[in-house]
Each structure stands twice: as structure tokens, then as C-alpha cells.
Image (cartoon, rainbow, N blue to C red):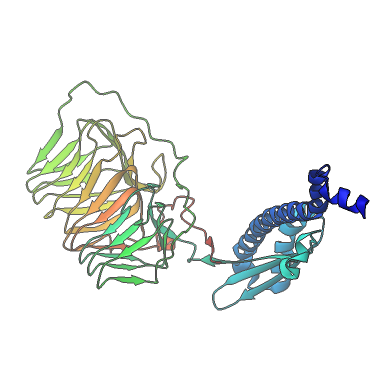
Length: 414
């Protein structure tokens, strides 16, 4: 008893004893923390693999018509390539929805943690599910390129954008990537924003816009600009006033202004509008077949006023094949190009303004009599009132369509 009493009074070894008694608990807590860290890593990796597999399968969906066996083989090719990262303990399930053209990939990883099971037996197996679908007809007729713009596509009051058989994209990741004001209307095969979409009252969007879409690469990024001649400093603008005249292709230093009641025909070829605007004003009219316009240098902007008549068809070959308008990529950012003409019903080809805003503010339909019109611009504003019609009847014209405007898009929906 004396020995026991002495032992109880002795403080020596208390800390060591406490540590010895608490060590298993500390080890268990540390082990659980490590297990949960591994769990988060595995879930993240598995989700990424599931996303990639579903996107790959959905991209092939139109060509294999929903064949589940083929879809599973495509998905498994992605899974198998990464199976070693999970110790090979992966199972894959693939289903498809014929009505929506979507593909769902479910992955399960049979991982067994050492400690975490003591707290939650349902922590494994680790699983991930992704759904992707191929959307649109495979034709794109409008892209707003600016990546962070507020209102990259802006449809103001009473304006209408009709993309006939093709898709409309905004690459801006802003929460107001697409903004549609009161009584504005957008109709397309697909309306897709990399960011968000803002609707005001009484708007109409058919089908409903899809948000958080992957941005569309600029399909003309690799297109070379046409050559141009050097211009003297402060070269005067060519002014055609109250004349009937034909203009040959070439470099027009200082730009071109067509005014009064002039009727001008542009001969086939490339017109370089350099260091000045391209203006058609008053009641002037212009027409040109197989003509393309390259806007370069200072103040090289476009302006077609309200009472004018515009009838233009892009070249079918040459440096501007398929391009009606091409803004120089070295131009000042933020230039505004304006189409207000109430008779601009034939604009056949692609309008490419990679750094500029296209503003359409006509009181009558624009481009509605063209076999196809595509717009690739930094931003697009439809001011109050216009009906911009973008057809995609590529087979009815010999004017080529730039690569990148044809081909379906795959969107991860879950």
C-alpha cells in the first residue's frame, strides 16, 4: 500500500504516459485526415476523367446514332488510358438519351481507405457521373469574340436576330455575356454563352440560351491579311458624288465615300480601304459580286446610312475567299462599324471584325436575301428596331464558308 501511495504521488513520467495513452487516437485522426485528402484528390481526378469520356462519346454520337456499344467503347478508351492512375480498379457504365442526343458516363473506383471507413462505411467506392451532348446543327453563323465583355451580344429593344439553321455564340465569360432588352428576340438552332445571359421583360429566345458554354475558337485566326500598297501621309478620301461609276479593285488611301444619288459598282477583286472610312451615305447605292473589303490603318471603319442600297457578294477565291469584310487584326481595338441601311438585304459572305463592334440599326430586314451571312466580331449590337437575318444555305452558293463555321459543338450539361 505504501508503494502504491508513493506511485500515485509521483509526477515523473506523467507526460510520457499521457502521450502513450493518446497516441492511438492521434494516429487515427491523422490517418483519417490523410484518407480524406486522398479521397478529394481521387474524386477530382475521377470527375475529370468522367467529363472527358462523356465529351468524347457525345462528339461521336451523331455518326454512330446512339449505339451504346460503340459509345461505351469510345468512353472506355479514355478511361483505360488513365486506369493505371487508379490502380486499374475502375468500372464504367455508359447510357444515352436518344431524344436529347446526350451521353452519360458513370465511373466507379473501388478504393478502400485504411482509417476513414471507421467513421463512414459509405465513403467508398468513389464515383463520378458526367453528361454531355452534341448541340446545334453543326453550323455557326455568329460569334462574339471578346472574352470578358459586358453585353458582347446586345439585342436592344424591339430588335430581332434570326439565325436560320445555325448557332449563335458569345465567348464572353461575363455574367451578362448576352443581354436582351425589352421585346428583343433571338431565334437560332442554338444560343450559347460562355458566361451568363440577361433577359429583360417580354423577351423571346428560342431555344432557351445555354450558359457556361466552352468558347468557340476564332475560325479565321489563321487567315492571312491581303497585301496593300503604301499610302502617302494624309491621303485624301475618294469621294464619289452623284455619279454612276465602276471602281476597280486596289488600295484606296484615305478611304471611300459614296454620296448623293451615286450608283457605284465594285468590280470583282479585293478592295483595301486604308487610313480612312468606307462610307455610303445619302441615297447612294452600291453593288459588287465577288468583291471583298479589307479595312486597315487609321480610322478604317464601315458606315452604311439609312437611305442607301447595299448589294454585295464575297469573292469565291483569292485572299478574301468567302470574306465580305475583313478588319485588320492590327487595327485599333473598339472601332465601331455601322450598318443602318434600310436596303442591305444581300450581304453574302462572312463579316470578320476581330477587334471591332458591328452595330446594326436599320429599320428594315438586313441580309435576309443572302444565301448565307456569317458574323465574327469582337462585339455585336442590334440597336432598336432591326431584323438581322443570318441564313446558312451554304449549298446554294459558290461563295465558300470559312472552316470552323461548320461542325457540331459538344457541351457538358452535368
